[in-house]
Amino acid sequence: MRLSKQLENVSKAIICLYRELFDESPSPMKLQKLCYYAQGYSLAEKEELFPEDFQAWQHGPVIPELYYQYQHFQWRQISDDIEPPKCDSLEFLRDIVSAYGRYDGAALSTMTHREQPWFEARGDLGELEGSTEIISKDALRSYFTSRLKVHA
Image (cartoon, rainbow, N blue to C red):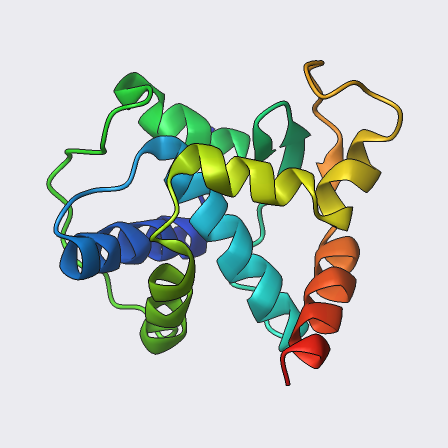
């Protein structure tokens, strides 16, 4: 499983921006959630950042390919040397990292559990049960469009 070029660029940009803004690296869990919020708000603004879908895993939205890319870090910070990629969405991603980067991975996971896209994809599953159900891009677009309207 390989990441699309788009997701590779977005995830590397998020890691680099996080390091710049917070003087440390995100954990893999935090990276997943920052990608989730970036994709959600981008879809609300009518643009898909990357083609991969999130699945409604136990600890929140996860892109399996991204999970396998960084799983060896487990709960630790991602310490790979990463060159900042060329990314058209850099200022947008900076806003997402600034807004959500101050929360740790567990807090971001809890936040996603309270949001429609994750719990709708999981249906009747208990919070501790595993799932590979897809969180649809339409669900993300709809939810984050309503969030933008509330904050407008």
